[in-house]
Image (cartoon, rainbow, N blue to C red; front, side, top):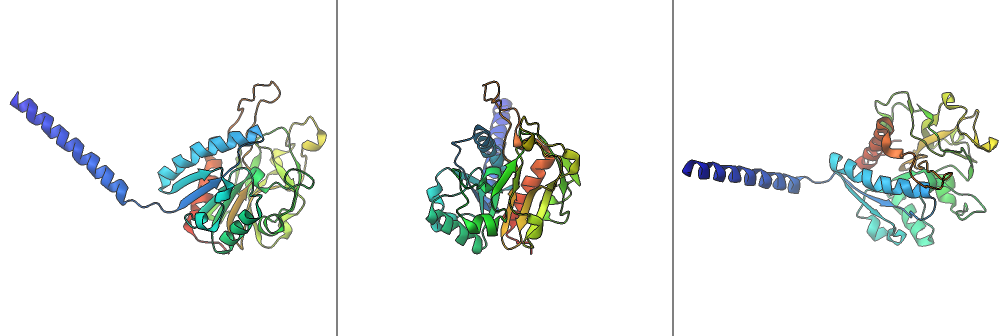
Length: 282
């Protein structure tokens, strides 16, 4: 009986020791950087699906790579005081619409902040609910100008690495198959912009891209950038972020998830870690 009590006490001591040691270690580890993701999550179900997916996936990545991930749907937080707490800003689905929010974001980027944007965050079309009424963001920062057209329905594409030396594309295969997405094209040719470094583009093996039914929503040729950075800022935009949804049968269930491919996820993760490193690539 005495031996059993001694063994039990020893086991409890060991357990307490390792729990205390683990807690102590967790307290000592400082996150490498802090990320704040802004989203709206109210309109297109495909975009809402991606926002929910991203807000599940990024915390897992943050835990693995020891950074902090926060998210908010309050665009009023896009101000100097709030942004000063974070090294990286994400736009998951939309862009800021308030003038003071836009000024705060522009100032944040000019002061060396980092930004990653997905899919609809670059959308602008006049006339629409999201007109091109922010020249710095769409012309200078993103370089895209206005939205011009898209593929439909959401389909996978073969993506080609355009810059093999960027940290975001480190050790990625020269080509890989993306998850399904609605692909955008723009009024501006990014190849003509010397500040833009295109990282990924649609490979010709993808054509025809899209299924219609409208013929103009199926691409048969052309050059379509998918992800790029602006050398004057610490940023990456990527066109991914539109999940396939079962609209046709009225179920509105998810038919695909953006963050379900390991190669594409490596690109997103490496992009984010480069964002958090604080090293702008000129």
